[in-house]
Image (spheres, rainbow, N blue to C red):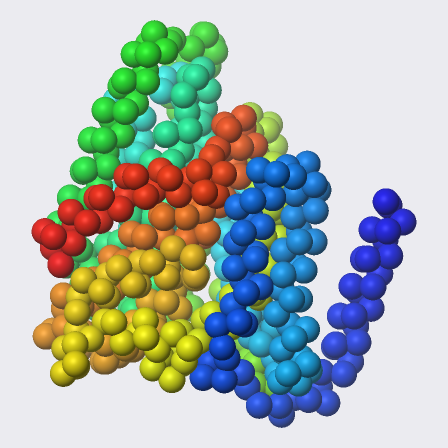
Length: 475
């Protein structure tokens, strides 16, 4: 088996080497246009999702040891046919675009937040009662719009898990944490979630979402928090109101407080990349360029992560249950996801010229008037499985793409698009970046999290009725 693995690894390295050598000869190859693609090209992405959903259930041990290879395999299941049909240069350019524009910035930001937040430890006796747990979810929901859903999730998931380590029933707490802290809480500012940051870059005012989504978000959050408190109270009573053994840790206090400053540095780095545009691009391959502001951001994030690792006591990280497996798992899986979903995003971006034109046409009447309900549900449905940032841009542009009009006469449409992209990222584990990370951390600390489809039973049963009520009241 070890010999087979080594041969596979050597073959993969050799294949990549050949691609890197030959690809420059095809640098002027035509780009990949969504209008040229049928829905058949989306099959590798669907298979990638099904692998995440089914393999852990039917072949858990195999999946645990080989999920990275499987993810890369589904990525290659798109790239190889793409190279055959459209040329090696086009395939490699799509790969380079996905890596430079999306995957590398995505994983560096996650890595930085994971490292920095993992250095903050809430020390002391925090007991996971319904009141305490609901308070943690409320605080996380508020913080998510100001430090990002990923930052808030990485900051508070470990304290929540430690507070409930003595509890029998813990899955529901993590599920609601994903709903609220990792998704819905990030809907009030461009700092909260990537789609809103893209809207900010397109000209949407910084506080526009706060003004227009505060009441709707507060309503959805209040419904979910009340429901969570009711469920947690019932389960807490069913467990006999358990009291944890005395840990001897004393009163609550924070270790690694310097990491709060570093979290601020992460936020400032992201803001800098959006507001500073020197117009300098570094060519990577063909038409693929690394913009200086993005390169500077990524370097700053890596430096911040290194500083956090250096200045935080390793004993504190160990006591916090910190290890690298969650970020490694996310990095491997999303490598396959980002590559295999290239054709799906390309088809969406083709709009009415693409294979999903019938879907795009659902958001407008025959005379071109927007159907806000459809904007909310279609943006949300696609954001549940695809990257919610490009999905937001697709429907933003479908609605006109002019920020002044979107904030004025089309304000309800922009509100529907924004809410759909942010809220419904909670529908699946892959709907938003921190979802899978939270799940991985919880499993690493002994919480038996539901499968891909098992989690969707929670989201369909709880979130969909809440979103229907949201639609009736606000859209």
